[in-house]
Amino acid sequence: MLKKQENKLIQILNNVADWVIRIFLVNFLTILASIPLITIIPALTSGYKIMSDALNRDEAPIFKSYFKTFKEEFKDKLIISVIIAIILGLSIYNNLLYADYLKAGKGVFYNIGYYLTLVLIIGVAMVAMYLPLVFVEMSTLELTKKVKLAFYLSGKYFLRTILISFSLLIPIAMFFSTPTIFIFIFVGVSIPLLIIAALTKKPRLFLKELKEND
Image (cartoon, rainbow, N blue to C red):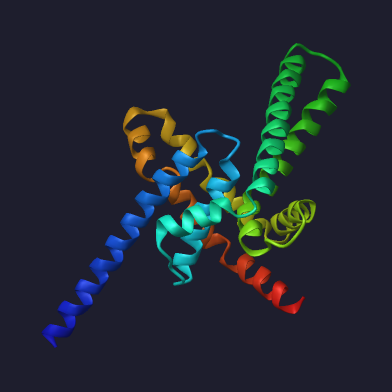
C-alpha cells in the first residue's frame, strides 16, 4: 500500500515537472519567435498546439513540435499577421484620434467614426484569437476561409471568446511592475496560451468532427 502511494506521488511530481518545463519552454520559444512581430501568428499557433495537445494527452517533443508547426503554412500565417497588425494599428490610431475629437466637442461624424473603429478593433481581435486553432485543425483551407471560420467560431462560442479576451489581459497586466515583468519572461505568454487551449477544447473537437464529416 505504501509502495503504491509512493509511486502515485512520484507520478504526480513527474507530471508537475513536465508541465513546468513545458510552460517555461513554450514561453521562451514563443517570445523568441515573436520578436520580429510579423511572426506572431506562427509563434502563437505553435505554442497553442503544444498546450492544446498536452491537455488532450497527445504530447510530442516540444522543440520538434514547435518548429514543425511554426513552419507549416508559414506564408499564410505571415500574411495574416501583417494584415492584422496593419488593421489593428490603423484602427487603434484612428479610434484614439476620434476620441480626442469627441472630447473637443466635434460633431456626429466623429462619433460614428469612433464606434466604427471600435467595432473593427473588437472584430479583428476576435478573429485573431481563434486563428491559431483554425491553423492547427484546418490546414487545408484557403486563407480567406480560415479567417471566416475563425470569425464564425468567435460568435458560436461567444462566452468562451469573452473569457479568452480576459485571459489576454494577463500578459498586459504583467508590464505594470518590474517583478511581474520578470514573471512574464517565464510564464507571461504560455499561461494565457494554456488557458486559451483549455477554453477551446470544445471548439477544437467541433473542428475535428467537421473534418471527419467532410
